[in-house]
Figure (cartoon, rainbow, N blue to C red):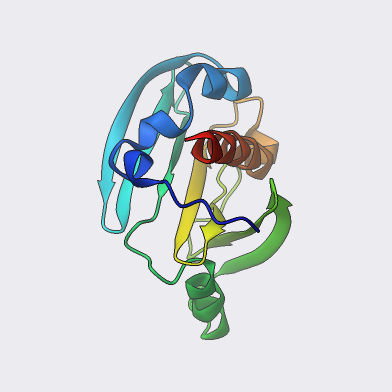
Length: 152
């Protein structure tokens, strides 16, 4: 793994990590984007024009333990879902949840360096084409973000 060092721009402006046009190519017309201020960092929410469908993504800057923190949470029984998945563009990834599982939802965390993860969370309704494969959509969004992070 080649750690991605230059992430400050995307930590402060998470919507810059993936162009809206790229999200639209994966999920349909985006009505608007909004920045979410979360306890562990900022995320971008892309809200699709059709139905109650969103994708949120961002760098979890407040978690300095990176992916290992999820492994530790899982070891203590703190997660209801924990599944290491195929690497995203050469970076280790896990799908996890703590009670928020369900069809159309997937929480994907990709370790872009030891102390930083990029997390993608689609929340899709049954009318969305990726409803049955929300993790597949999350992986595509994460891959697009990694490509852009590496190019920064």
